[in-house]
Length: 352
Image (cartoon, rainbow, N blue to C red; front, side, top):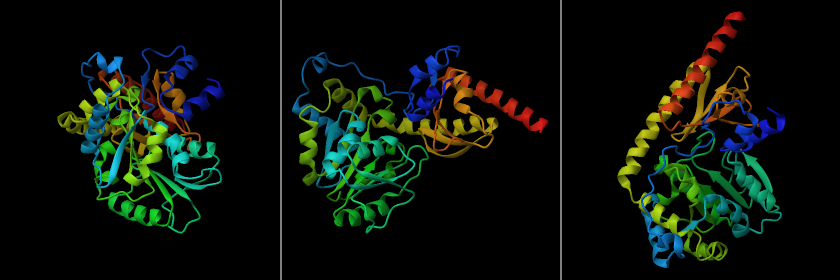
């Protein structure tokens, strides 16, 4: 594998096409464990033909937002706005929240890299932080991913809301990305009493429901902060099919409850599967795990040779993120690779 290909596989998850080009001899089909997307997607219901043939009606968009508010929560005086994926909201946040050129922005890191990239592209000065800053810190805006990707770091809702109120009262802006909060609903600020002005909460349909291709997310803000978001997102920020699928999924309480239980069980199984290969769990959520390897191995390469794509990190070369296998065949492939690594590790230890 070339150094360029190796770097590309560590920048973002989901790049199975690049992995297949770099490892043409790997067994097929590729098993993608490089993302935090639920591999057991919500079963898409039959869609009416008109969902594809016309623009979504205002009533359908309102119904979608009502379903999201019921599923996630929505504080009094706040509004829920659909977006064509949460990624676009990340890119728009610098334009909406500040005069980004020259703005001083703190980001709790390490985290999802698109946040820093969006602010830097807008001309902001980005500082990576290891903890919540003091309210009087020399910052204009702050970004928190809660629970965090890739390490699962979490800030409990009550202290985070108290911080948000003080931060925003000082005239500063706060983005809280809750893309993975479906598996930790108690962390969500959307279950609180109010959203202060200057606070933006992001949600993603694609992660928990396994529907990343639908490209649907949500922005929740105080109603007084909504106009610039509405102006930039336009009248039809969600497609007709996305409206129909998401409204149905968000109201399926039985599926949501059962899936949370399944994901928790699968995450425990993932920890147990990787442990014999010398990987120690050091974070994550029920949608993915972060693991540490102390043996200096290139595990992106080792797993890719077996047709399994995982996520490595240039900033932490001994840490790897694993998503969840989606079926019995994927689990069996993962278990075989781990068994091979365990044998090699034992042999290396014995020869020392």
